Length: 493
Ligand code: SIN
Image 1 (cartoon, helix red, strand yellow):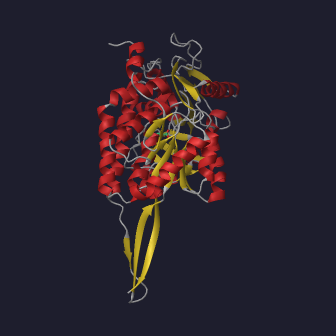
Image 2 (image 1 turned 135 degrees about the vertical axis):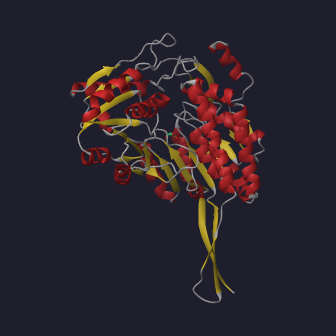
Image 3 (image 1 turned 45 degrees about the vertical axis):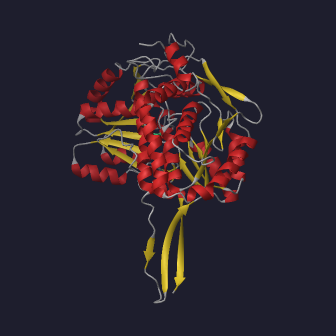
């Protein structure tokens, strides 16, 4: 087996990590760069260009110039390019997954899974490109005909997060390119390498210059100010925090841009007394600890009916205690580091607040100094019991490996508590009562509901939230609508 040092060396040899503008790799016009660090070790992996407003404008120029050509490329040819990139991703899965683990920290097995998940969005939207149908609408006069067309919205800016550096990008790139839009993408400052690797695959797959542009930068503001100020950019798609989402809505007002937002969540995970308890335990662990708890749809509040609370808590704690924490490149580790110190501090704050207000620690509760990075961001998987709704951990997304258990008595009470949040992204519940399945699913105010299923995400389903969790849908047949304008022709004949 190769050592971690060798993997790092092999991975980065001969790879150029620069801005992708108009089909060419280039430095920032300012010559500036910034370090990308490995959250598991604190080491600097690489320097990437610190893109400026001028770089962003150059990318918009390229995307605007490429738009007329790309938007009329036959759908089948656009689809073929997406399929080629998906195939290349699977072919180079090991390399791409290793780069992801190095910059993001998630265990290699999860990173491999994410590469396949990311590729699936390109394959799915390749199919959707071929199904951008219009309509013929019954006219109101005998000598009139009405045709409805769906056309690309134009140049789009995609702003993606660090928690899924490949999949959140392809979930936007797939529909944008399938629809015939051209793109300027800005990956999260912490995880630019996966996006740049994808850029290289698009070049190899034959994407015309200017159709996909990638700007890396340490401070996202000059990028976002530039794309919002430019009338040629017709749409922004963002995945990230609700706080930033609100700012983007305000910024979009001046130029009335279309905007899609995948924002924060505060997912309830409800275990009814009639649930298959071992399945509920497995599901809760999958959704809570995936990506070290750093997903927008991960269970944030675990409600357990009082009749089975002690039994669930014991089984859950026993299984969580088996999760191995450490550098994601080492086989067997299933919990990697948190992305940075700010994430680490938020977890600490939530745990401290819960304990001050009467919660009890069933497991963990502490950071985990690790030989790779003693001052790093590893956190021991934590289970808290007797959490209540007034605590910070019940009100805000923790984004860390902490599972708060909350007892409840009745179905009506738990639905009320589950919905009592400004967020509405994902919710989960476990039950074997078919009537309850429909009753509860219909009352939960969330865009995604997992019923006896803790991993609902898939390319063919419409991912997205209600309330303050966002606007629009990604994935499924709905996903491409976000990148299409509807126009109708009314013809006198
Ligand atoms: C997210 O955290 O927003 C993405 C999770 C997923 O696609 O499953």
